[in-house]
Length: 321
Ligand SMILES: N[C@@H](CCC(=O)N[C@@H](CS)C(=O)NCC(=O)O)C(=O)O
Image 1 (cartoon, rainbow, N blue to C red):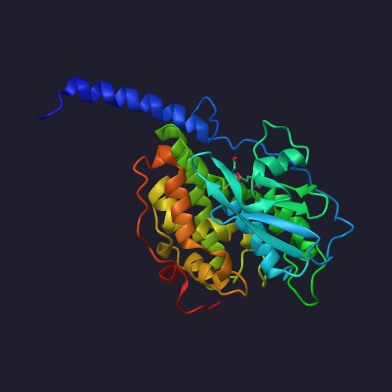
Image 2 (image 1 turned 180 degrees about the vertical axis):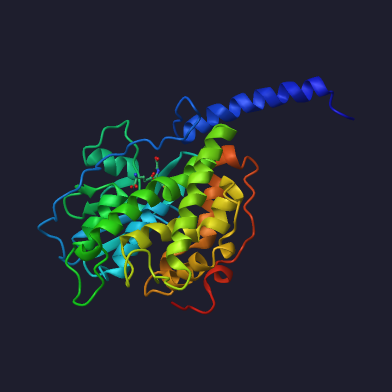
C-alpha cells in the first residue's frame, strides 16, 4: 500500500531534523553549516624529549582508519624509527564513539582514560595519533602536524630521508598549509557539511588544490614529489587522504567529481608513494571501510559496508617518475 504523501513529507522533515542532531554528534558546524573540527588536547609543539631514540621509550598510538594518525605512522616508517618508537594500534568502539585498547595499556581500557591520566581536561576529545612516554604515561604531543615535525627531528638511522629539508622549507610549509585546509580537512568539510552551500565551498576548494597538485606532478617539467626531488612532509600529508579517496571519501563524503585516474600525475604519484619502503603496511583498506561506513551512522544509517574497490587496483602498476 502506498504511503500517503503527507506522511512521507512529515517523516522527511522529522528525519532531517534528527539527522542534523546526529551530525552535531560528529562535530560542530558554524552558522553557515560548514564543519569545524574541534580543538584537541596536547596540541603544542614539544621539545625533543631527552629520552628520544632510546629503544621502546616512546609509544605512538594510532587507529588504522584515522588519516591524521596515518601521517604520523608514515613518518615513523619512512624515518625507520621502529627501534625507538613502538606502535600501538587502538580499536574503534563505534557505539561508544571512542578508541579502546585491545589489551589494557598502563591500566587503561580506553584512550580517554589515558588522556585523563595524563592530565587532559575530561571534556576534551581523546584523539589519535598521540605520542606517549611509556614509563611515565606522559603525553608528548597529540596533534598530528606537530607530531610529524617532531618525528622528522627524532634520532634516526644514518642515511634516512630528511622529510623537511631546510632548502625547501618554504615550499613545504606552503603546501602543508594548503593541503591541511582544503584536502586533509577538506574531505571532512565535504562529508560533514550541513547543507549544499557548505558542501559546495569545501568541494571546490578541494578539487582546486588537487588540480594544483596535478599541475606540479605532471607535464614536461613534472617533479616526482610535491616540493623536492625526494618525498617531504607535504607528500606525507597528501597520501592518507588520497589513498582513501575511492575507498571511502568518494562514496561516503561525496567527493566524486573527478576520480583520481583523471589526474594522471597524482595517480602515478600515489603509486610511487605506496611503493616506498614501509608504506604498504600502513594501508588497511578493509579496516578503513569497516570503520568509516560502520562508525559514521548519520552518513550511512544502514551500516552496509561496500565491497570494494580493492586497494591493489589503485596502487599497483608501473611506477615512473
Ligand atoms: N587535530 C587532530 C585530529 C585527530 C582526530 O580528529 N582524530 C580522530 C580520528 S580520525 C579521533 O581520534 N577522534 C576521536 C574523538 O573525537 O573522540 C590531529 O590532527 O591530530
